[in-house]
Length: 203
Image (cartoon, rainbow, N blue to C red):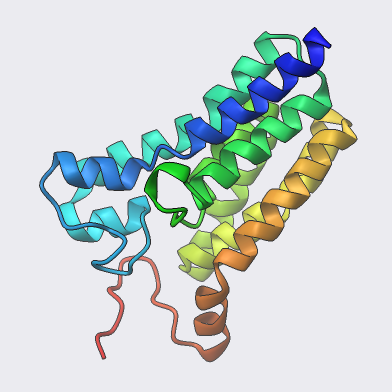
C-alpha cells in the first residue's frame, strides 16, 4: 500500500512539475507578451525567442528541459520501478502539453521530452541530440529534426535500457509530440515550413 501511494504521488508530482509553464513565467518576468496569444501562439522557447530574444529563450528552454528531467531523476532516486519511472516521464511531459496551472494550454513538448528521456537514459538523449543535429545539418528544418529525433526515441530507449516500460513511455511521448506538430507537418509537405535561420513569411 505504501509503495502504491509513493508511486501515485511521484507520478502526480511529475505532472505538476511539468505544468509549470516556463515560457509564460519567463515572459511575465521579462515584461513580454503572453506567448499563448502573441507570435506563433505556442508557449515554448522558439516563440519566446521571437518575442524577447536569446536570454529569455535560453531560460525558457532550460526550464522546459529541467521539468522533464528532475521528476524522472527523483523517481529513480526513490528506487521506483521502471513502470513508475516511465509513467512519471509521461506525466511530466503531459503536464507541459496540458498545464493545470495555465488553462491546460501548453507547448509542443520537444524540450521537455528531451529532459524526460535524459532522466531515463543519458545515452538515449545523446542519440536523440545527435539525430537532431544530423537532420538539421542536412535539411535545415528544425521541426523535421525534432520529429525524427522524437520518433526514434523509443528505439534509443529500447537499445540503451532494454526496459519495455521506458520504451512504452517513449512511444506515448513520441505520438503526442508528433500530433502537436501537425501544423509543421502540413507546412513541410507543402514546402512552406521556414528553414533554420529564416523567418516565417508573413501573410
